[in-house]
Amino acid sequence: MEITPSILTADFTRLGETLEEAVAAGIDWIHMDVMDGNWVVNRTVTFGPALIRSVRDRLGSEVTIDCHLMTTNAEETWDQFADAGADLVIAHIEAVDDFPALIDDLHTSGVQAGCVLNPSTPAEDVLPLLPTLDLVLVMSVVPGKGGQSFMPEVEGKVRAFRTAIDEQESNGGRAVKLMIDGGIKDHNAAMVAEWGIDIAVVGSGLINDRGTIAENLAAINAALE
Image (cartoon, rainbow, N blue to C red):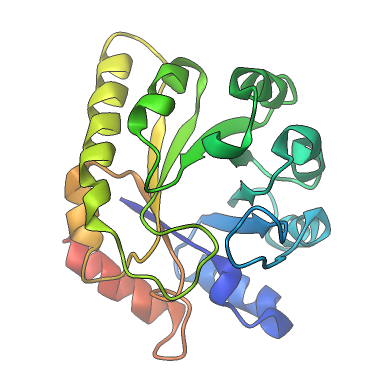
C-alpha cells in the first residue's frame, strides 16, 4: 500500500521544505485538498491552482500530484487544476451533476479522473463509473471537518470496490486505483491494506511535530510489514 501525505497539516510558511522532506523520505505522491469554503462542512478555503503550480515547479515531474476537489463547481474549474500541473483530478460524486462528462473532459485533456464518495454515500452510486475511472477515493471521515476519528464502517464499501475493480481488471478492463482518506495512522494502516486499499492518504499521522516525516513513514511501513 502506497502512502501519500495530505499537506493540510503542514506549516505553510515552510511548505517547500516539508515537501522536499517528504520526497527525500521516499514519498512520490502528493495529495492536495482543495476546499472552496462552500461545499465542505467547516466552510474553510484552502488553496487554489497557483499553489499547485508552485508545488509542481518545486518538485518536478517525478512526483504524482492529485487534487481532491471539495468544491461545488468541479465541472467548471477542473481545467485550472489540470493546467496547474495536477496529474489526477478527484471530484465528489455528490457535487457533480454529470460525472461521465467530467471524466471525458479530464481524459481529453490528458489528466486522470478520480471519483470520491463520502462515508454516507453508497458504493452503488460510483460502481457504474468504474470502466472509465482511474481512481476511486473512499472517505473514512466527513470531508472538511478536522479532528475526526477513522470510521471503520466503510470497510464493506471498500471491499465492494476492491471486488469490482479486481473483476474488471481480470476481464481486461481498465485498471483503477483504490484510495482511502481520513484518520489513517500507523495503528490502522495494516487493517485498510488488508481491505484492499492501494493508496492511503495520511495527514497528521505523517506530518506532525512528534517526529520527522521519515520517522513517521517508517512507523507506518513497519506496521504494514
